Image (cartoon, rainbow, N blue to C red):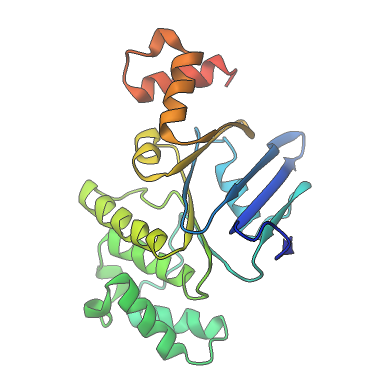
Length: 245
């Protein structure tokens, strides 16, 4: 992974990413770029390669081909499973991770994240007693401790009820408005359409579409005209089938 050699305006660039697990190709030449403050939804069915892509962007998994360019040390990674110590308080979790990351002033870093996430009033509450939505906000706060320019979220709203989901996306949208590039994965086409300024569609490791929701709707109508009058999710499934997935 190289740093700082991409276009100045881009927060992240991926070119020709390939990943193989034995004979299976999890990614087949996937590439895209993301700008500062952009919300990018990586959408596709289970097994499409979404988590593999985000793991490579985060530097956790090495690709077998291609390259990623990001500002050095400025990518935050939030996996689907919350990496929290449930018996500790909200503040204790943030202090622990700030110390593990080597922050000069862990308490100041924790206080900043408590303010950013709106969890200051819950700082002394045990994490296990919090709602799923608040636990996910803490998980994201940990990913933000390094003040990354790019934040990667793997299925961030899984297991949340509609109200928790709405609050979480309001928070994520606020991060983007402040200039953080947010790239998130989801298999929910309606969630991608609602919250993603750009949609990157993956299926069987192949990038099928990269553009806004209106462009995807047009592509669906063009590829699967027989499903154009049906709900968007059903039409999207027909689109994938027409593309051989």
